Length: 149
Image (cartoon, rainbow, N blue to C red):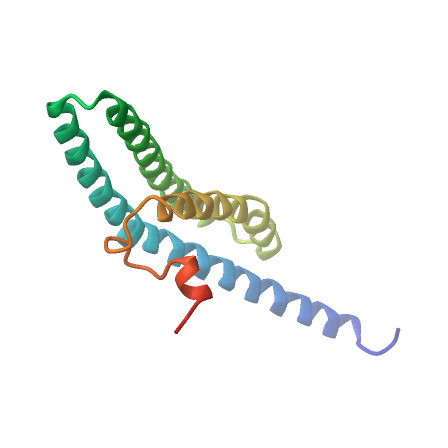
């Protein structure tokens, strides 16, 4: 008590809010770009490869493998749709937040709306990472980062 004046406390608060806004905005923009330019194209390539394999197996009548491929195709397709929708939700929220001029309100909305969208998109991308071939995945995978040579 008595260490900082009310003006100094308010100033520090304002700096912290501004820093948080910039950090979350940068993270969300980067995430949307990475998903759009790296994750989605890699998953699309994997989907095309898996679809071709499924069609080949269907032609020779391998029913057991066919159903496993159908399930894999469905998971890849759902993951792609979820990733694209997640990016669209993030961009729509940015559009909505463009009209918010009160930094405290903006900070709260980023915390309570943007962060959960980012977490959901992260989980979707992580799921796709586990289904896409290493040669197609352009980013370091978790296991590669854990065991760096």
